[in-house]
Length: 438
Image (cartoon, rainbow, N blue to C red; front, side, top):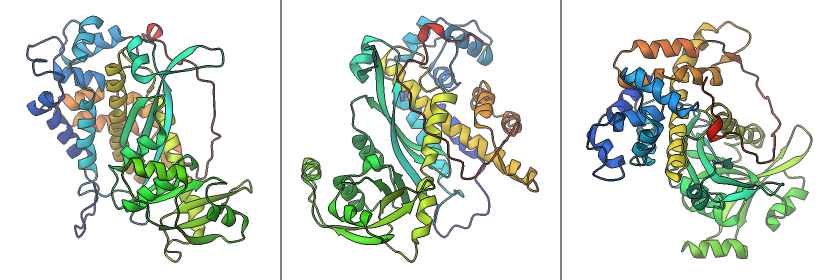
């Protein structure tokens, strides 16, 4: 995924080229063979064959399922709609990994021979976890488990995690697992996808010696906010007047040592750098980082650097409230995974289209006092149906039409804006029998 060294590039890769690669994969026979549950599946021509099923699930399906099916069938063939039951019987034959497959094509194309935004030659990333509400069914409860709200009501829930390219607004890897899966476990699986030129920002929930040891051994650069009472060296630094200090961690706390032994890793002393950051409200925070060179990475840059982590929070907001990640289309565990993986791909496709529109917008608004960006919520709505047309046809007019629509009603960029993090009780937001028909 890294830009090839020694190759001079003076323009961004055209999104059309990336979309063409995705289309080629969708219509490749090997794609169907790889992503069907059984070799007997999708061998007979049905009302909704394999390719149509994939396209339907990428069409931001959020309203009444029967209405969505009717609209889609009219869009692609003008034929009579299929029933919800027929759709459900078809979708169980599709592996959820089908959308991961397409996302891997997108990532490969996006990060190869292309100009991408970087911070000091690093791909600036964040890893963070969250939870989501799920619809109620026996299969979902058995697969993902549940939690109880303050009234004692059982709520099916899942643990999710995202490995996110902050500057380019691309989800590199996303996971959905049982609600009681640890965030550390998901982060470790993300790290397998990381590159040596990644700089990953973590919140303080990821401050553990064994985890940091793992990052150092894999030569992955990081910035982690630490908590007090973490290790003695950090506690003493917290109370000192020093703003930056390189330390060696030469011993492993018992709990961290257990984790290393379970994974078959021997602890080795390692060096890290501690950075003291003063927040706008006057509070002090301590960051631990692999960026030891104090001349190259001056202490003053770390406050703004760590604040970049907010991008992954903003993207979670986009997934949950705009893409409506929790508004699922089925009551089986396979449906949950299909919808989750499709939402990740929809997020990244929207980013691609927005990137082209943003470049045009920058030129058009060049002399404005304020800078503007593509309206993420509005532009997502414009993708409905058009994404299907783009993935079905070779006509570039659909791409140009979408780009023009993406530039409508741009929003001003407010630098340094900090929105409060809102915590609410876990209540159900979407109901399978109350989906909108309009």
